[in-house]
Length: 185
Image (cartoon, rainbow, N blue to C red; front, top):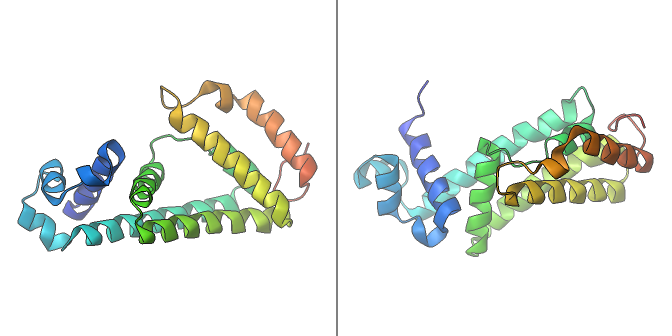
């Protein structure tokens, strides 16, 4: 099924944010990139603030789905989080990066949405490991893996995503937080 006009507009806004920052994501640029008239854009999103709200709603929705996958992963919450802490260019990745770009421009709604997303992930990991400090450490490891993969020249940075490296990392984590949310060492 092809994306809806609304989704095409949000995709265009998000892509412009990622590629050029908030200043590049003008209403004219968004409508041109989405292949809709400015009137068509304004029908779906009455302002740039409405576009930002739409992108942040998308982010919250995708992150809620991701947090549920973390909680229900058959491999365990920590294993799932760590193995998926890479930038693959997924809709969630792109929404998060778009939100980061808005936050760089001091968009308070973006800052709040990012904080809520991070809290949701942290809560899922805390529930799995039962120790808030260990959960925070796991989140920082996840953030570091994501950061390194996001800045790699070609999508994924093989030095941090090779399964044997992740297995060793997960073994160390399991010594810190043995339990149902972590793999056996």
